[in-house]
Image (tube, rainbow over all chains, first blue to last red; front, top):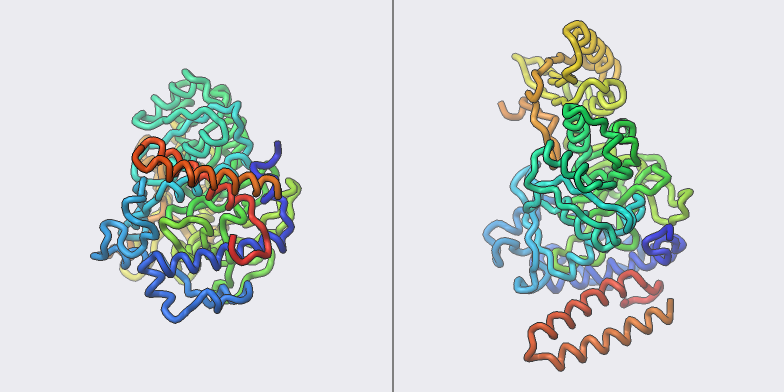
Length: 435
Length: 54
């Protein structure tokens, strides 16, 4: 069967929107009566005030900073005013990665956890994961949600799951071979690291037999997606989600953009300047999310600060859900360097598409006196000789200048000199703020 | 879809009754609650449009 839920995945737009509107009002009412945050935030607002779809915009945004604030010294510990159920109904603790500050602690009741997993089943099924797949999860099982969802959803769609925790990369390569895993979910860069480790062991990654990979935990630029496909000889898919909001969009076999999982989520893509108007197809907008059925941690209009390009609501796969064509990046990842707007994603796209011999990289911005400096720290494949490295460095400098309008220094690091990530990679370091 | 929704309501009634019959049995009560959780999901994924409360 082509769809996980043929009923909801092919509903006409007006019906989906009517359902989401109705679910939004139900959640608003629930949040007001069960969450201290929303009791306070929505004081003076009643469900009856939301009469049309446009009225949803009357509900103020929720920001991550607010979530942090409502957990500080607010009972019940550790979830504070964000908890939407009795604390005795919480069955699982999760937390955000803390990349942008203090982590947010996220409570999941059994109901909410099952709701999250159901949403994720759509993501896996869209990416072609089926009961015939033996899915390897190269992930340190811990407090972060990323792969737990993948694990339980893969079980639910009928796959066989191999938990790949507590192994080093070599151990994971061996386990994939030993158990003949044929699918995987991992951070895109860690998938590349596994491939590199396999090559170091004298094994062609294509011979591992991995048919499908679903990327998780970090952005997947198109160039990286294609590189992973070429490296493994497999199909590589993307999805997007966060601990606060769940996985809310996934890639289908057409591989053009990400389908929003409707009616699980109400997604608004708002004009970056005013944050009030929905952008048109093809335009960039800030992603604002409401997970419509999760009650243990109700979140209304969560402003993710992520920017995406709005896609059409038709697709060759036949799904009628709206699409995000490209995740451009986080609003706060885009920096001004020497007066020029700089997005780290541009460098990643460049390296992944044009420099297959660079296995790892890091972008460091520093300030020397009054001048900002960008240094691209790179690690190349061991097979390169001195002349090759010199040529690589020269070409990277030239191409980076063309792509960013900024002069970048390139520093070649020894093998293993740069950190590897199996969760969210931190390849962009703006040290100007540290000073 | 109407038949499916009707069946979901029937199971819900049975699960509620099972839960109330098993007040003194943790195992049966908990499993009845788990059925009710999955019914919440089933109702969520078989929505009716145009209704105020689902």
